[in-house]
Image (cartoon, rainbow, N blue to C red):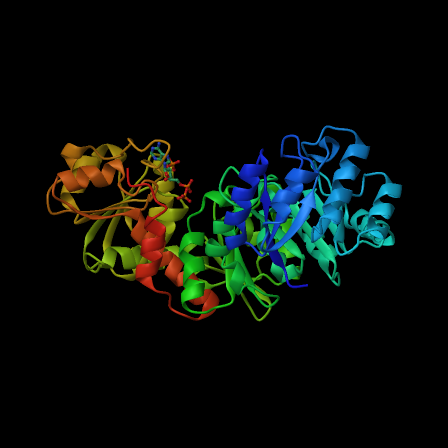
Length: 497
Ligand code: ATR
């Protein structure tokens, strides 16, 4: 069965349920009527809703012991499910934890309805052996579909579900929770019969459920299939990354069968995640905080530039090998070149971290005259000697600005949640200077605002972000993406403050 999107109806009254059903049917393949949400649900109310349906409906009455809202007696609950069959519900969902005699009775007397027997684990994902056995146990009851839903404590739990889905024609399976979202997004790739999405934010029937808008518009669900190539961003807080808004629309524009998703990975989970990355043939990823250095332990080859920079922000799989690249340097140079030549310029670089390394590499390639200053001077000294440039003391910042054509902030100062911070005082800036900030959250940092007020030319952090993403996109797909579309989609999701 081709994976379908199901929107759960979680209204508290029959009238509201009907209203939501109409909206949901415009967007989903199938809906799930959660009758445990509806107050005083009875046969008449159920009939009124079901007779108005235009698409297939699953009727579910989740008891409180399985995460639902039905608190009545079990016989009452079974009675409602039998009525759903009588009213020709397309599917009826019954929990595996229910009385087995009743499940058997429901399956025996299902008439035109199909029966889903479901298992939920709201706290963890048991090991694969347990899940396989569970699937066999449920299968013995001979339902039409088996549903196994677990909670992902770690991103690596999703891979147990992908294994479980192998060779299963009749299984609905994914993980709940924020860390389980990749299994909801990749339901088509791995063959879950259904994936659930909420009608609107706040209407989720389970944790981690995406909205129908996110699933179908952001993650191009309609375009996905078994051959979809998987890309993403590896980060401890990957869900906050904006790159999904740039890459996914461009896959659609160029008709490329890729999807780009957040991989929310804790440091201790990284080695196991990278094993899964290989095993499940993921094609590449961006790498962000705090994995930029630790990732070296999991890749096969470091490309020359990434080696020289000493940091990798991008992985791409070529001939089964995971190669570490750096596209930040390319992004920095392209962003700066939008407003100025780099060659021969005096440039002051603030900061001596990983981002500074990529920026320095791009500046040195262009034969410019660079001076580094940093809060921790020893780091500036070390970096300056590595890249054969000058260093100086933070205290001399005013004099150094006067002598520079270009000033680049590579530190995190000015980033949310402290957007009012700046390493440079407004009065130290002079008209005609070029000021670049690599911070893009917010786009207009305090430094950029000061620079604008003093008549400087500015380069905001979103420019570098877009250009480095363009470098990644080309590496992964071989296609040059559309700059305007990347810019437009990113800007919709960036704070301008
Ligand atoms: P990234 O990989 O993003 O560059 P990093 O390697 O941790 O991150 O580097 C952060 C840079 O921002 C460093 O230059 C850091 O200065 P220190 O080397 O002294 O730590 C700089 N930075 C961060 N917070 C700062 C602050 N409040 N004031 C001045 N510099 C700061």
